[in-house]
Image (cartoon, rainbow over all chains, first blue to last red):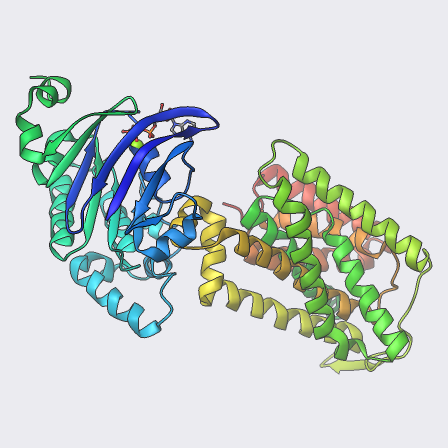
Amino acid sequence: MLKVKNLNTGYDNVPVIFDVSFEVNEGELVSIVGSNGAGKTTILRAISGLIRPFSGEIEFEGKRIDVMPAHEIVSLGIAHVPEGRHVFSKMSVRDNLLLGAYTIDSEAEIEKILKEVFEIFPRLKEREGQKAETLSGGEQQMLAIARGLMSRPKLLLVDEMSLGLMPILVDKVMEILKEISKRGITVLLVEQKVQEALEMADRAYVLQTGKIIGHGTGSELLTSDLVKKAYMGM
Amino acid sequence: MFAQVIASGLLLGFVYSLVAIGLTLVWGVMDIINFAHGEFLMIAMYSAFWMYSLVNLDPLVSLPIVAVLVFGVGVLTYKLIIKRVIDAPGLTALLATFGLSLFIRNLAQFLWSPNYRFIGDCFVSDKKVMLGPVVVGLPQLVAAIGSIIMTLLVFYFIQRTKTGRAIQAAALDRNTAKLMGIDTEKVYALTFGLSGACVGVAGALMASFFPVSPDAGVLYSLLAFVIVALGGFGNISGALYGGLIIGLAEALGGYYIGTEFKYAIVFLIYLLVIQVRPKGLFGW
Ligand SMILES: Nc1ncnc2c1ncn2[C@@H]1O[C@H](COP(=O)(O)OP(=O)(O)OP(=O)(O)O)[C@@H](O)[C@H]1O
Ligand SMILES: [Mg+2]
């Protein structure tokens, strides 16, 4: 479904990502793990069109998307839940969700998706009219994910969901992500919390200073020396 | 007499608000101060004037045409100038709009001479209306009502429509707006157009009781800056209240202290408020 080929990218001509290749197949939950500053967020930004590759290609369902503007990529079926939530703070929960459905024209369809999303996140239904900035950190994370689902994506890019959440909430959002994946949405999850991410991923890639240094199924990587040594202090 | 002064201050205030809303909209969405805003207003006044004197259109009739015209001026300004400087560092964008304002003003002098022109005989000219105990000029009353309607339309558009939500989103967080599928380029062009439409309406309304000249926009854009700062940069309701405050201050100051001091009082209020609340009365 998503193919990243020999991607080199970065900021203002400062390279950050070096020759990264990976793919995500339909229906999978794939994770990219790596520590602070490895370049995880940068890869997601390149996929969703916020930054351009210096070289290399990104393909989605057989189409080159690395030349398309970000707003068109959304219409193809890729939703990006950015790091740090980035909910529209001064706007209501409902308006945030409606913005998530910006690419969908039919009002009836939007209402239908809204209903489905409220089923997964009943808490958001209760807070519908509240400004997003008045939500707790966990609720804002839920809102960011829910907003991502509103465009009925085929592929959901999720960046560092666990950031700043209590462990109990981390478990909860991970559960929700699994649930979303079960509903047939392909998920690419980027995480610093290596253990949790590997436990739930079908497959995963390990990123270190902009290069992929290992990949395998989640359970393979969990027991590999590479991951144990580098990320779990064993 | 007091009621009379209050009434005329409020009527003027609504027109000021509309001009300021146009200015604050662009600031709120793009973080750009459009120094040519007053010149957009001047273009609107001339458009109304020429349609009146050449094809005998009453300003109230030509108003929608003027609004669309200045909307177009706004969109063009974005596409030809602002787009190229919006991400440029430092004062580039500021200097660009400042340069544009000088250019438009000089062009107007060149094309139409610096002379003052008046719309002498239109529908509202020289009519008065009794509102309870106070008498107000019909031009002022119509200008206020027109401004209120346009202000409500802008509020409705921004807060209740899909495109309005996209404008809000782009204002709050440009990159995340893109991730929602919003074409931020389009949103910016539209915002500039909308800002132009605000002064388009205001200008067409003002042309029936203010002299039209190449410098006509200078004072009002200065007042609009004060209002925007008072109301909090980028805050649309703030601009509405700020406009009313300045309208009242001007009227009260002009009556009780002296016409020659009315703008001094306006700026004094501004300086005082900024000391206490640097982000404006309604800023965040
Ligand atoms: N907007 C930016 N401008 C310039 N450099 C940036 C920018 N964003 C990130 N970088 C640099 O790119 C590198 C990779 O950053 P990135 O945010 O992709 O890492 P990450 O793996 O997501 O880290 P974290 O786990 O902390 O979120 C870092 O060295 C960072 O300093
Ligand atoms: Mg990151």
